[in-house]
Image (cartoon, rainbow, N blue to C red):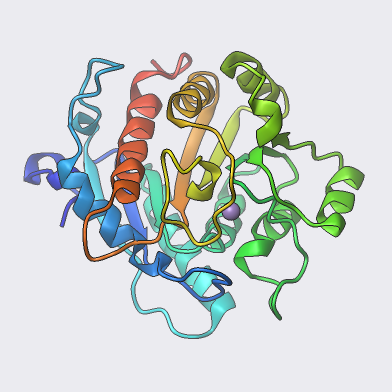
Length: 290
Ligand SMILES: [Mn+2]
């Protein structure tokens, strides 16, 4: 099935500017399971998403969106992350904006590792309820809870948005490294412009966005592996994303940790729409490229 149920005209693998990479992968989930069904759920539900963007007054899919999937993974977690990274890199090297759909958050480790081999100067912007800066979690250095710690070892320019859960050692490590998250409670009283400005100042021109859907309040997302109360809502988040896409070269992104199901759900619809919104922002809002 194609994202947004697009026909052949818009899904050509060579011509498409966007590659949707499904990564139905789940290995270190620690709380509610089911994120391996996320990508399928998002793509199926995307057939109900409107093609026209009422905010931008364009149809983002005209840039072409092809669909790809990471298959043939086994039970060697570290090797699987490498394979996911390699598949990402194949598409990235063809000049695509790769929008990866998880799956658990650790897939971002494989992707950013691969990205760092071809891009020397990159920053990572993380939307998440959790800092994910643990060095070690449940017998693994490559757990979903260690995602940003492993990424930090490759890319030291990190900006975090929406954080509302972290351990004391994570806090100490981040403080030592001068990583200052924009906490969800701070965002309550900050306007979108000042949030964009803080993210803009703390990152370089080229950025990769990793978006854990547990970042959102339950008004937007209910089905996620490690839910946390609180969290920003839909419109403020879209404003922040649009602002980032306007002033940065977002080279690729991922959306992870949605719990999928056999039935279409409100959460999978929100996630599919988020993906479509970001494609619109990428290709129709960047002030340098357009
Ligand atoms: Mn999270």
